Image (cartoon, rainbow, N blue to C red; front, side, top):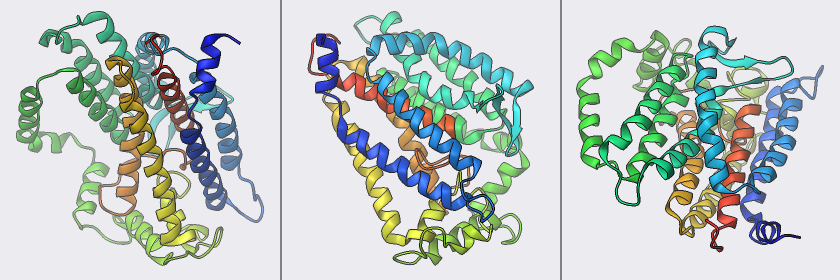
Length: 368
């Protein structure tokens, strides 16, 4: 056994891996419940998610044995391909859920926007490792990555997928600020954005405007507010212990739209109640605290930067999804990591945490 193999096995983080497995197993249970029928107990969605979980575990282990510089280099060049795929999706993408977000290659569909969340931190890390010197990067150094963020955001929003676009731009700007972009420029950008709100409002599509109105309390409960009202009914009707797995009425009677994807947390609340929902949130909390503790132990700045980028999109997705289900945030198409149905999203989650595991396994050596 070589030193590298021994190192990765010795410092493999079984705690975070176990937490991810538990969350994915919970996801399988409730995707099964959300898609169960007497005629087809094991739906095609459940079977695909099982495949996604098993292959995701393999992806996790593969990524756990890659050097972070190799990851950054691969992600940097792959990201240019992803931009082309995002452009291709707009014109030739597979239509579903009101947008062109998928590319159909026959045996499977995948979302390039999900791959963008995985590869963008690698793109940023590799760019600044190679183009910035050891001192604080010059302002002009930030122009290219900021333009890439902006182009990626526009292409994703055009699909349309505003939720994923916002996650990408928020996480990207945060990483660039962490590298050294002066806060005053972000302040000025925020001020300009605020002053441009009336103009941006006219750019939004009608359904996006409706979602904002719904969040503000407007709309008919049988029309615009139907989705969030059914979600709140499902969450509230679960009580303390829930109605039982596969026994949720909002879920089984198809009152709850997108129950296997964006609103899987509503199904969890209805069927295992407040206690079960708190347990699921506790698993997320333990996972992110574990990842944060591991990332803090990394001594190399750019290795730490990559880990932050790989974690932040998962953290933002969790907060946004739970927030929108509970009517604390406007409804956007953001799946709940490891729980919502979606093979590409599941793969990206496993790959992200596998990469973090690889980097933290190197933190006690001098090879970074």
